[in-house]
Length: 61
Image (cartoon, rainbow, N blue to C red; front, side, top):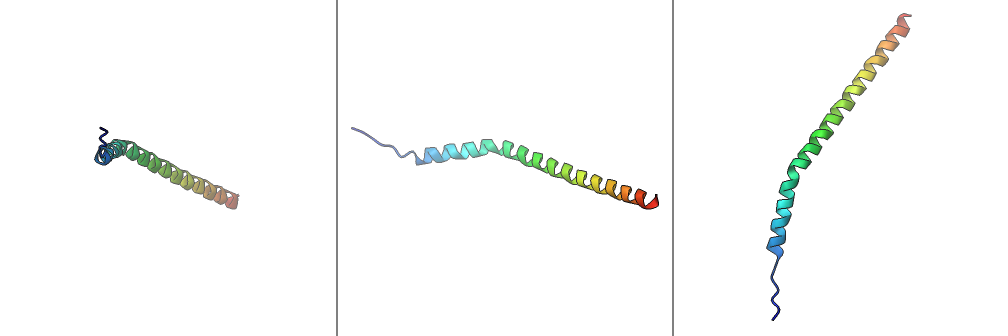
């Protein structure tokens, strides 16, 4: 006699556990993207300031 069990609840429990275990990784990735975005913004501001200083130097010279 072959008995088939419904494994839908077991599969849902496993999926939930996998999603819960992935949360720290997702948080770390989000923090890394935030740091990269801040670094890019700072780099753009520094480049803009350098260009402005050069323009002022050329204008004075």
